[in-house]
Image (cartoon, rainbow, N blue to C red; front, side):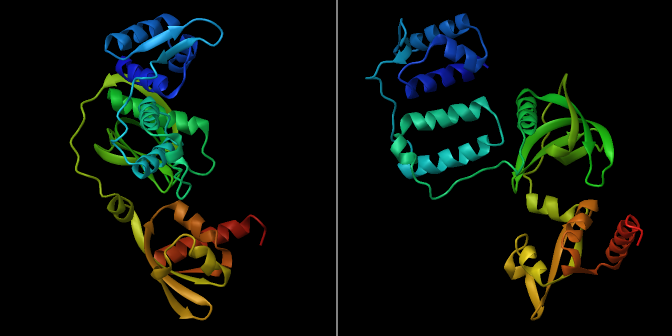
Length: 304
């Protein structure tokens, strides 16, 4: 949008000594004439933008022009910058970049030197393709475009759906989309890296009302089960990488018991199998039988 571009240009000019029309045009993917018109509009609004020709020329803002720097304390600005930079690791957004530029404009670089904390909202192995997909979905939310997707469920079932994207969600470094699904006639959470195909549709939608999401309830109560697990040996250390230490009960010197609600799908059995013989699934009984079947089928691959 033009307003976003104008704001971005102002913030860029405020943070750089000078920048050329070509550099701005390349960054915003427009032609040089558009940038020149934007600069004229910015100057007409009262912001003193000047230009110089030559090798080191370009556009710049009068050095005497001041932006109010008292809105955030240095500590507040540092925390916000780290949070926004963490989000930008997974979401490529012009609005996000402009916000980061705005904060860096009104604060000195020295206030961003605190390395006490850092955020990164991208998951391990995060690809450019996935980041581009998240950005596409973000644009569809802004423009209210419906999306056609091919979705792989956690049980490896593939379905085609038409959805209305309403909210991006990041939980534990994993990106989800909260959208109204025409197939289910209700809102659903879609894990974005399980979307096999995506197509932006020209058809628009009207945003639907939905109550504030209780994400803990969303994850814990839908298609979930209460499991009782026994860990021993090195499996105890590994389990405590995933679950809070306070949730374990000490059975004996070498065994702990964990009672916890987890999503009920094929993924959870694969997760259990990753502990090898250091985990025993105690309850529920039907889940024990499912584990036995998986182990039998696995052994059959080795002629045992």
